[in-house]
Image: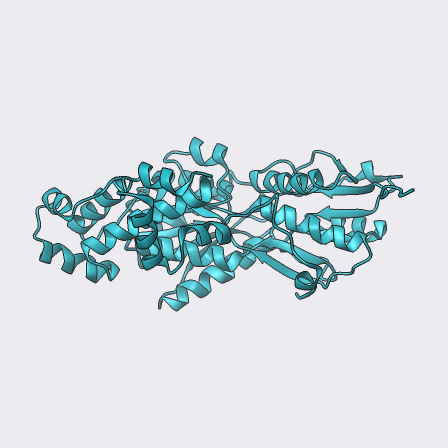
Length: 398
C-alpha cells in the first residue's frame, strides 16, 4: 500500500504591507495550490520588521524570506532550514536568490524616457534597500550608454520623509529640464511628485516621473497619477517556491541570483509627455498614442498638426528614427503586445478590439515589427505562474 508524502511546513518571512510583496505571496500560493502537501505559515509584518517570535517552537521544513535586515538573517541561520531569499540585498550570499531583474527595469525606464524625447535622466533611490542600490547602479549605466550622467538623490535612510521634502524639492528644482526621473519604488515616486509641487516644477512637462511596482493604490491616488514599471512578482514567488521544493526534496541549489524580468510599464499622467523640444512632433505623437486602438491614417495625423507628410517625417525621424507611418505601426504593435501580456483574449478578439482587418493581418505586422509571432510573444512574456516549471538542472546554475 502506497503512503502519501509527508506535509512540508513552509514559513513565509515576507511582508504584507506593499503590492510587490503581496504579488510574491500570490505566486507562492499558486505553487502551493499545486502541492497539497505544502502548508504555509505567515504573520503580518512590514518591510523592515524583524520580530519573528511566532517562529519560536515552530517545526518546519523550509523558508521563503525577504532577507532585508541582519535580524532576519540571524533568524534564518538559527532555523537552519532550506531557504530561498527573495531580496536583492544579499545579506546571505550562501542562499539562492530569486528577485526582479533590476537591470531590465533600468533599461526599460531609460528607453521609456528616450521614446518621450528626453535626453536627461535622474534616479531617486532609498539606501535602506539593496535592490534600490542595484537599480540605481543599473540606471546610471543605461544613462551612460546614451552619453549622459544620471542625476541621483538618496532618500533619508532613517525613513523620515517630512524632513526630506524640502531637500528633495530643492534637488528637483535644480535638475535640468525636461528630464525623466525613475523613482526606486512607487512610494518614492509619490514623494517625488509631492516635492515637484513644493518646487513649482511641472509634471510631466518638466519632470516625467516613473515608479516601480505598479501599486494601484499609490499610483492612482497621486496627482498626477503615477506611471510605473510592473515587476512579475507572482512569477518570482512561484519560481522561488519551486526552488525551495527541490531543496526540501534533498536536491541542493546553487547560491546566486536568478533575475526575473518585469511584466510591463503601466503608463499614466506622470509620463504623459512627448518631446517638448518640438511641439508639432509632440502633438503628432500624442495624437497617435491616444488613438492607437484604432486604424489611424497618416492623413489624419497630418491634418491634426497642419504639416505636410515630408515635413512631419523629417521631424519624427530626427527625434525617433521613425516616419509618421513607422510611429503609427510602433504604437499599434505596442498595444497588441500589451493586450497579449495583460489579458487572456484570443488573437481574433485583440484584432477586433484594435480595429485590425483580421487576426492574420495583425500577426503578420506583429512578426515583421518584433521578429516573433503574437503567440510566441505571449508565451515568452507572460509569467505563466500556474504552469511554468524550472528543471533542477536549469536552476542549479547561478
